[in-house]
Length: 196
Image (cartoon, rainbow, N blue to C red; front, side, top):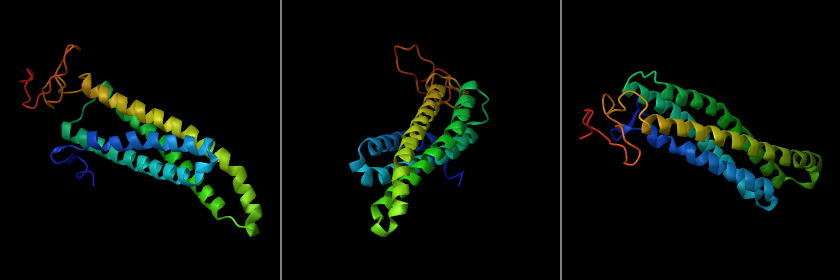
């Protein structure tokens, strides 16, 4: 499976796959906020939030696997920026998982409340008491997950675009050459340092 996640059509897969959690986790947070503040929207917002959170968690897993594949393709690099990116990804994964779990729990509660009958009044009353705290917890865990996904993505982008990492001068990896800030970075694919 790891070999399949290394490339897509000959390009490193990691930069493509990371967009799944980067988009889905914040969208799930928006859904959680809407479900908390607009009770009339809960019947659709909570399941959508759970679906987005699930896709976000799957995306984090795939992004981490493809990141390991990218590291294998480019060689072991002990650079500080890449190491920091990897550490933040390891921290983001459990946060996104907790958000996913709470969002699914909220969806189950809302589903059971929608299906509640007069005969299940005791269970329905308990679920009603749980609904708002669980929705509030989904907002809290969603905010933390979104913050860590953002920090992880930002550190990964910096490791490439600021030229920190092996081959950032257009050498081994041939990714990004040096630039002066006023001009866009020089992208080199011929593995020589002058970027032409």
